[in-house]
Image 1: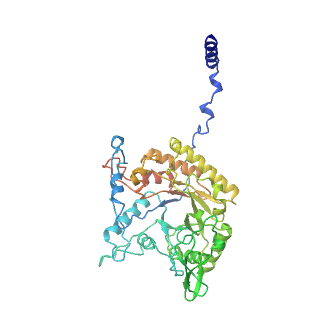
Image 2: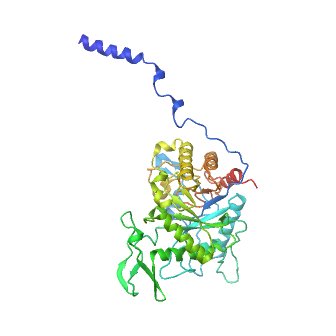
Image 3: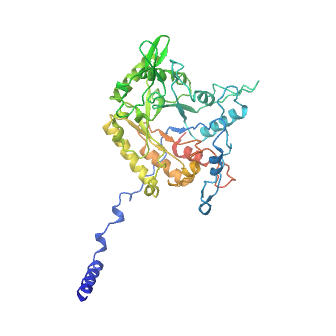
Amino acid sequence: MNKILFYVMAGMVLFTSCDRDEGPDVDDNFLNFEIPVIKQTEEYPVGVYYRNPGGGGQDKARYERMMMEFDTKEGRLGPWLEPVLGNYGIDQNPNNITDVMIEVVQQQVDWCIDGGVDFWIYPAIKAKKNTLAPNCMEGDERLYNILRGTVGSDVKGSGKKVNMKSLNFVATVNIEDPLCKNNWETYNADGTLTGKKTTTLSNTVLLNENNDICSWVDGKGYTRTDMFVEFFKSLNTFFQDEHYYRVNGKPMVVLQNAHKLYTADCKGFYNDLRAAVKAAIGEDLFLVAQQDQWSPPARFEYFYKGVDAVTNKNMLNNSEWTRSVAYDKFIYLNWEYHREFFRDNWSGTDFIPTGAPAFNKWVDNQEKDKPTVFHDPDVFRTMCNVMKSQAGQHKIVFIDSFNDFQYTSFIEPTKPDYGNGYGTKFLDIIKEEFDVR
């Protein structure tokens, strides 16, 4: 018993005699740094994602949760916000465009211009089966035309259309849907149907070996690769608009799910696509691949080589709670690594940071598995500074989004006299942080 007591006491003496300086020091932590404040001396082009609200607006349950006050006792994580324009819808059905819908979009355009936004990034558009350029598009094509003012109110005698004024726009293409999935029936060489659909591409099902004839027009078959070309040629409908956003004269196109383009040579694919589009419509494309949030850049090396720039999805959409305690620094370091990696390893490929004002998973589905970021002007201003700090060669930044009510990641003005309403504060911050005009 005495021996046991002796060893315990000896251990205690040894423990208490340890020099505290031998342990970890907060000064040595990789997060122990100050993010440099970037003075506003140059123009940063700002692109903001515009979400499709649908004909009836946001889902009623989600919209109501967005308007709820934060109350953990009641299990509510609501941001307590109400947009100025309410739960608006932009009906895309023929003969259903009202004056009110046009007025809603016009107000949004005017707000963005006043807030220093340079262009909207429209929702992803889809390729259309058995149709060639310039009409190989469907899905949100009508929404594009409403937003850019080529389709107006259907009210008799109205004539109201959106006036984009100085606001520009960019088209988005979802690489995966439909040309990389099993959406379309396939054809034999004689034009008869095979009875099968295209196979969904994967890391074991490559485009090179599954380049099925998936469209048949005027006695001729068109493969998946052919339809990619027809699809991108069809974008010329938008490129011809004076409000289409360009980088060094090249029309920008954002590519969603570019990492689903399974082919043995992505760079060769993009080179061939560019050449075909150039020959057909005389345009050199500026392609921006959207990468999943928090993904290491080298993971998609074979998918993104051949594009002009890479951007990221909303970094606040994240299940790693430890990151949320210092989002600004974690995101700063992540973007710094991306920007330098692309520049040094991918022949100068540019990086476009995508920042976000807020994120709330509970509003979407009442789940509480991800950190919630509420609308805070100081936090968003810090995020804007991080975007400027890591903006690439062209100094372009993206913001997600103007009107994503599903996850409350929006900068659209809210009623200042309701709950935590902020008016136009977030647009004002964008102007102050990015606009020198």
